[in-house]
Length: 252
Length: 271
Image 1 (cartoon, rainbow over the protein chains, first blue to last red):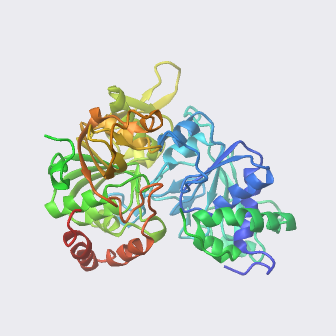
Image 2: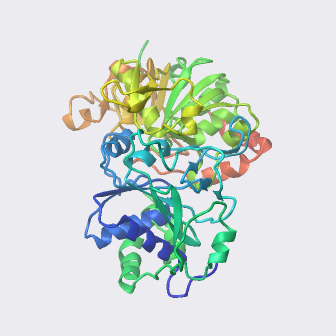
Image 3: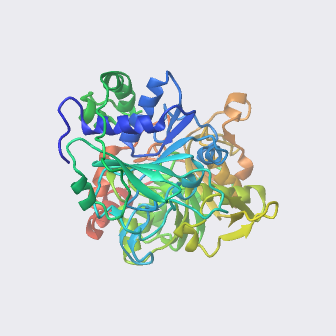
């Protein structure tokens, strides 16, 4: 990964991009092992003065559910979760994600943990943001080996949600649901179009000239470092230490 | 037979070939009981995780206790892939029924209600569905051209989990870990390990009663202090990260996994 300019880190820039995609919503949920999306969600909440509601599923403190593991999914099924994040061992140009295996399903060469809630949440959460820091031909492929959850569905399949964007360490793609393709939106500082092309296994659309991903504003950085980082340290102590230089606290 | 039993006796309902449901890694996995099952040499379990698992499934798979696994994911989280699960799948020794989290919740809820199936949105177009001949797509009979998936009710033989406390009448306090109640309602029998026994009845205090699973559903209870170790018991103790990192390192190879079993499973006697 090429170094970002010295006054902010790549992680801070990615969190800022994601926070702007979350925007002004009522409820955003973040799954396990997602420190940058969690930073973005908490940043959106700090900007909104307490809104959106943020459910960090890995956290005790930032998780208000009281009806067991099913409540998140029931909530999402009713349209009460507005934004969520998914990643994938493989992601393809139609927005399909693979969280299961590479190679033959019965005897795979690589086995990932499994699909988690993707085969449901991808359909019913209006704004699903795909996030995969490793932007390579290994991860962004022409066609996934296993579809944990499809990016698009036939017209008669009940679907109120789906992908809106794919954020990587190199760029920001928007997903065009009509065209069923990604469209390159911005390239992060220090990266080039050639590099994005060389490292992407699928075809994508793009404007005539592709802008650079904007740097986080000074007040955004301040909010992230002063308000968000201490909240994050409870859940992701190593990440908070690395990115924000916070002393490690014991997770409770 | 009294409901409070020594651990090995409490685990008697988990026989070879049983269908066993266990909770996700963060809500009270009965790890001392899991080690006792491995010591006993239980075989051919049909393991269901509600909806995911970490060390518990990986240990049972590595120790050769599991014939089939129904799960949404098995992973050690921040400590990486679950090595024995990954190895067993790649070598074709474990039959996995891949699912997605809400499907496992819904299929157990069907059993909870005593109905044959539960419909669920999503799934259509996923290869999960393509590999599940037991799941079915129908046209919503109450609408036009609205395909929807039906999940057959999941009826485990036994539900097994660890909780903070229980009383001698068999009532178990689960607090806000409500999926433990779903598991217990759906299973034919429920076996619980607890940190300690509660004096008096959990149902006498309305605050405690709201978080209590009634003894009606519970077959046996064993006292096992720190019985979720090295995993967390919410609000009581966190994951033992150093131990999990050590597990991830050892279990990367079959030889290392055998050392782990010798050191932490076969050498440890139940409390």
